[in-house]
Image (cartoon, rainbow, N blue to C red; front, side, top):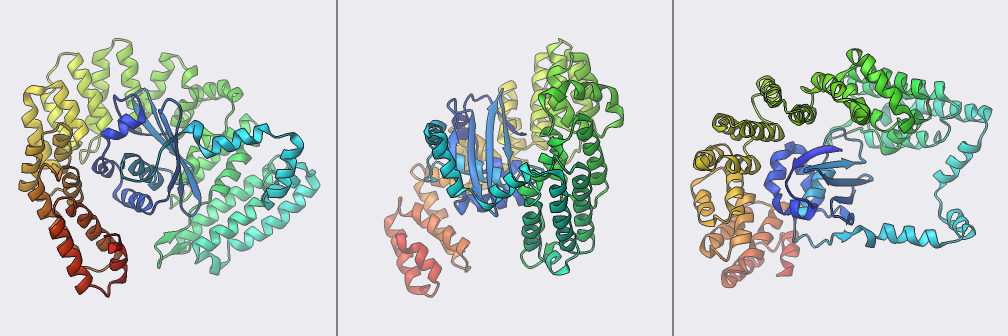
Length: 542
């Protein structure tokens, strides 16, 4: 799970009410945010379901494959996980968050107990064994029969199958036509890999060689200019099936085999030019069993000086419940600079031991060493709490926090601790990110001040201004009308569906406050722009 946000809310629906498009935009890398927004707008988010306590949300996001996204709220932390191979927070999580916060999306988020998946599961549980067998034989895909055959085969036949598939994969890895088409190459490689599913228990040495060979040769292919489609701006990404195959293979290994494989994999990935297989760096999270954990803990405490920080993080997460406070401190002091989440855990450890000065000093050193081009919301928020708890002045740190983390959440935190200087903090945020100050003012129903901010600031995103007037057009009809008209006229200067949709969205709002003006625009557009067929189609709802 990737930590996304912190919150005081107890359920996800309440948290989503505090979340906004602009906050999501500020949190994520620009490319990931915009791709996620495209996914959301195209209606790819489906099958949304809460658990019974509404602290977990699951969706399925359609793409090249269907990917499951889970958003979880626990102990004030909102985290996300996903089944796509991307190693960092991905576009599918962005699409899910945008889906969850949009009350006008038209999608219904239903309780998990009423979901289609749960109903299907209950139905299958009610069937007899013979009825289930008939269903499987009737509907099971071809891959099911491949896996059953491989699972029941003997070692000689497994070697025969492997040799044939291995030859086919070796040909793929040197096929220039395929290597010039990353999509086709990925499909071909996945098809071959699926033929090896469930042979892992018979072919441990052979499969290890093949797995590492695939990883190395794909990286070499990138170095030679292959596996990138310039026309579609798309490069090869390992399929879910390939990652699942590698994961299942490692699960079949004994404890020592798992450790050896992961260490070798880490060395290979660290020496690669590209991040294609970086998703495998999290392999350690998925392959160890409960029985492995005591051994893993002992290995971590004996070998942490020889392990990469990335592996230390992964192993720590798995065995932290088995560690004493002293052991936790030893490990966290090493990896705190790699991961702000681990820094917070170290700070909380000191705080729980009533070592407040040590907690403050650790976080102060971390901030001093951090990149000063941006800040970490969670770190500064915790730092401010500690300073307040120790009765120290937060003024200078609060200003620095807003400068480096210019968003409404940090302003909210700072003002809650130091109301006297709220106007100072608001001015700083206006200078750094007026769109986030707009969100803050709107949340606190300071609408007149929000309108004044819009009028004096030239750097608030047009989309944020549009959303403000969309919600408050009744309070400020003249200003809202002016903006909606401006959006229509501006977008009429361009051709393309995104411009046409912006026109339609503006007209949809305009018609609610000045129907005559809206109808005049629609009449004019239909007369002067009738050759723009997509525009005419989009406006047909009017």
